[in-house]
Image 1 (tube, rainbow, N blue to C red):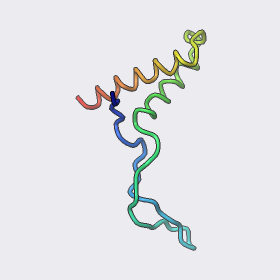
Image 2: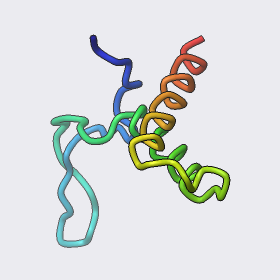
Image 3: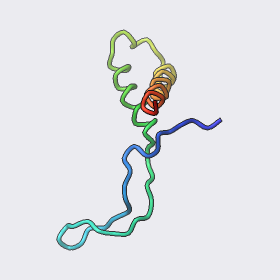
Length: 79
């Protein structure tokens, strides 16, 4: 079963290069990297791991909760 990812978290129009003056330019090639689901989960995980009420959770519990919350955010975003 495939999960909804929300697409790239930080989409780019292409891979670019800098010229000698530091200006960016280049062709459109791809948008790869973290998904929006990963980004949401990372933000949730930051909150749970710094909250004293959840210090007793294992890393796996933090991750499961974070991705569950990320899935809920994507669902709400798509409504």
